[in-house]
Image (cartoon, rainbow, N blue to C red):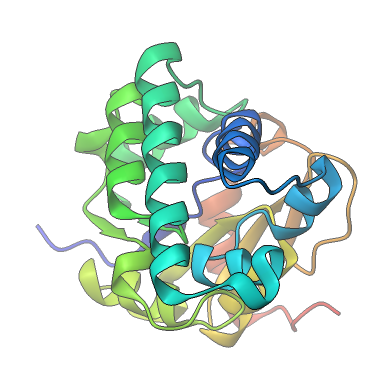
Length: 225
């Protein structure tokens, strides 16, 4: 069956609250390398690709081999924590995943995370069957705000960009959705400004027809901001 509309989900901070596991993984992995990072430094990098984060923290010591080794160790520790302690969806996520699935929307993950992390999270959420496509850091050359990750995700579910809605919690992600020609729903957990078409503090606050309405309104509404 080919559906004509899709929802493309960011993962970290949108589907799941993975901040603590990522923080522990970065902190401990870098400590093993003799490097100390602050929570603030970590938060400033959250959601970006490892190959752009690590050189900033290592400086002149950032050889390709060392970047690769640290990245691998960090992600292995993260997956260990997910498998050991489990992972909960953000408020409203489980309801929306199942509601959209029942209504015939195609759904895909569009994330800067490595594929193995996405697989571990979807398994922990028992949500693997909900998604028809997964795009990870392994599939893209340019991170958000470049629209590449969304355009690949749309092509994997064979839905044109103007029939896709992106769900994101970061400014860069929302900007990427706009550049891809897609509508977006921004999840602003801490009140930060997001340039999305619809912004909510939490997905459980969305009206039951929010996704339907957003696609229907696209001919009438001008871009915001």
